[in-house]
Length: 399
Image 1: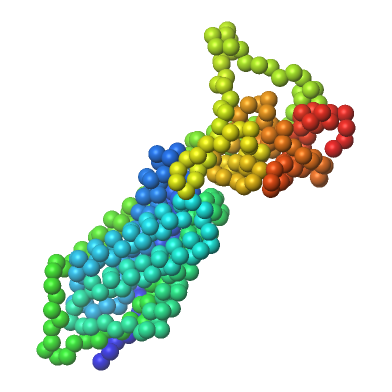
Image 2: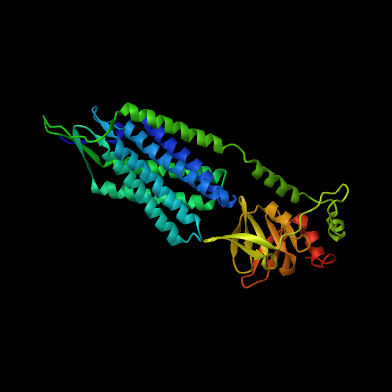
């Protein structure tokens, strides 16, 4: 007589653990992915591999914790080869999907295609892993539930890739990880709901080829993987000293100025030359800025730059036509650009003064428009209005 694996028969503690594992794996993977764009080129592959590893480890471990939670026949064992293959499938599709959306422009078509690949890969991992479950029984799967689990997996993959592209931290990262973990777990238990165990006829025996592992052995492996995921999660919570330094520098640049008019009209002090007494030399301004493209790192002349905008751990450079990603932080860009040509007008914005085509008062601050084939506007903080007016020759006029 066929026996359906009902969700109500699962161990609730293991079910809860499986969801938590998926969330922790998602948080750690997305957290590593968020650092890819802002990291040096030499670290991109390492961060991408780490993100793919923790995401796939979270998905695979969640799957087998969920399998251990199911009310399976007592004589069940696990074939080693399909179990390993299921993990390799998960690592492969996650890695390919993350790589595919991390190069070039992440168009909607590219993200959707990657989500379909990743979703179908997660479903394949599930059913290959279930194929590794063996004993004196056979399994059947309801076609409708298989299709529904595939839809859920693709939706979870799409949301996960969007979270990867958002490269956000804090609350946004937590919400993305929770949504991803719940969705992946929902896919697994939807597929399990459609699975039916059919005992073999009396006297029959299911022939098993290859190495097998007992549920106790699998439990040990899963426990080790859970520890790795938890350790990765805790390490991801360790503050990034470089990020903290960047934030402190950004806040310092935004600090109120006691007499903005006096400061903005005073002549700019030049650093002492090399070998000067008591004054460290300043590096010469760079003539070009690095920007990332689909085929590698390009360089654009600073004369073409209209503005630089902070975006998480890196910046976006606008050349009057479009924005492109720069691996520098906003503080690094400010230090590298010529202060005679560029001015930091906001905690998150630097502009090329010679390309300002419009300035107007707005609220407590102001708005600047930069020229070019595609003009764009950036905000000016209240503390910087006086300096902007002085640099534009408007020191005695109201913006």
